[in-house]
Image 1 (cartoon, one colour):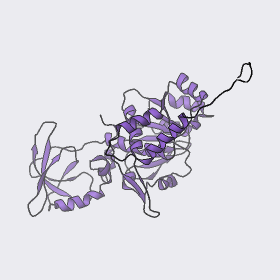
Image 2: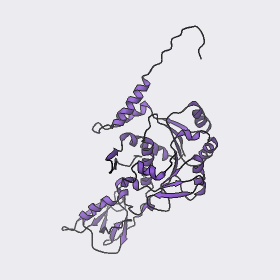
Image 3: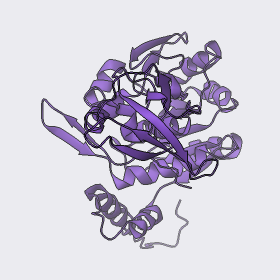
Image 4: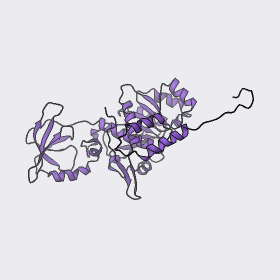
Length: 348
């Protein structure tokens, strides 16, 4: 099963010309985490990434997008020949006419739809490619106009399904605990305002009392990502907003655990998957999380990078950060410490 379903994309900032392409490394991490998130058991995991810069933010973003795709609710209904259709949620009157079902009742079922045009164009469409809704009859849009308007479907670019202006189709809520002073600045800094892919996420923040305030995105009955300033605020948010179905809790720094052990214990007892990012896992945290709280310790080191390189298509250009990470691990693992005994004494 392919757990990472989001294709590569580029985030750019039109003012300073900055651009960053989603890397194979991020896809690798996200695919591994999504696999873990899909398990029936509610996993509690320390994700130890010795080499972290902006990677955790991209991993969080991609996990949310992937889960949004997984939670997509297909609202398509059965149609009769001659029904006029448009893609669910589109304000544009993208109207086609339903002609027939092909391979009806099988897993390969498709629908034949017709657009306006010189040759009265019709083509086959997989049932789960778009979600259509029946509308009052009207002039058909040309297929060319349909393809031009496609660029307005932000969600379609990442999921292959239509929900433009109808984000209630995606029932995903993540709680992201991070020391972020300004959520708006955070979103802006990570180019979320500049890219339609990231605008599909509905962002909000919560305070120490657990009150949620919507910040950015398309208002629906739920919120895709809630940013909390502390573990205690995250716990209050969960209990105060019990109508939200929290799919996962992500803590972006294991340092949050210091002076917050009671909160760590309480949040660990919740029936929600938890992922905690760590740059360096010391013995104290290892003992507490692994031995006492039953967390899995997931270390992405040299072997994981070698596996990633082996699984990368030879025709695909290996991103520079993969080689940088490989070199960083190699450099670290090649270091040796020589101890010369200078006297016959026990050395502690």
